[in-house]
Length: 116
Image (tube, rainbow, N blue to C red; front, side, top):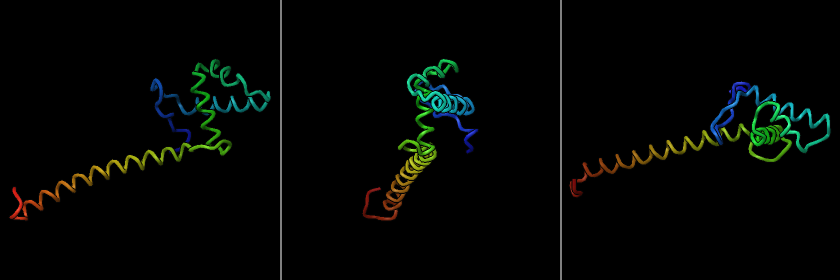
């Protein structure tokens, strides 16, 4: 999925913002910090201007820094891959339980010594 089509993951209130808004807001924070040299209060000021929660914008900026290699952490791409793998593991475990139950059923059917 391209970055322009991504939605933010659901957290907190569950409200999702368009990717374009997220990218624009992060860019505004980064440009303002670069131009002014300030870090304190920039996120809050821009969040108020755009009608966003300051913690939401702070999280977006932090994740953008991680994705750009400016800060340690798990990238968005890696988070998505981990979620996909966890889902696959859950499905495989469920399938494995079904297969175990089926093999036990057929073993009882084929073994005349076992109760049916």
